[in-house]
Image (tube, rainbow, N blue to C red):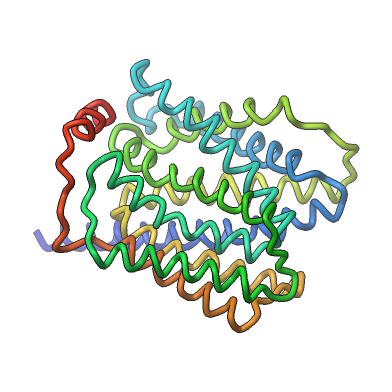
Length: 314
């Protein structure tokens, strides 16, 4: 029994390390994307190559390690993963690329971490998941944080209607990662999930891309973006989810905006103004706290929601 307990602890520790490493690598995606924009590569083109490069690697990994990938995706669940691949993953990659381009790295990333508020409300409406007064307070704190970031701004932070729109579009699509990931991880292993969603996402972006001429630096930065800041962190994150509860995984992943802010400051001299920094702290705190288990909550008994839950969980 003691050995089993130690094995479980080791497994959980590795899970936390996987998720923390994923967060750091994701944080690097902003600076790498900015480098590509400076070299003349458009946000749409950057989003495509980021997704397509990772897709190729996910498919290769699936083919190479078929014995350890678990059961394949069934026909019944394929439409769900295809739909999320196109709208969720593809939409997220494009909207985040434009959010970074129009508003800066810090604004894009901090808006991304308002997603737990969207997840909490969405899960409550769609799945009848618990919600309590504390969570509503955290949602209000998130909104207040965004307002402070928008009002405070900072060096290299461009707050406009366009940048906010792209940022919230990225947030909404990113929120689906929690909901669909939670649904999928209990049915399939990460190689199948990623090898289905990413190729679909790349194909969905392709019709909107106009390709530019590529120099050696562009190719190198694209490889870094697709391999180091997309393929590896997604792989690490999903493997982390098999060892750690989703709620705890999200808390660990909140180091991403902190790392992103440091990288943006060091590389591009992007810095929050004091008021915006306070707002960013509100958002990060609310994201971490909202991801923890809810106590004293009340489920919303709606027959229509029960039907939705039964269909999605089937």
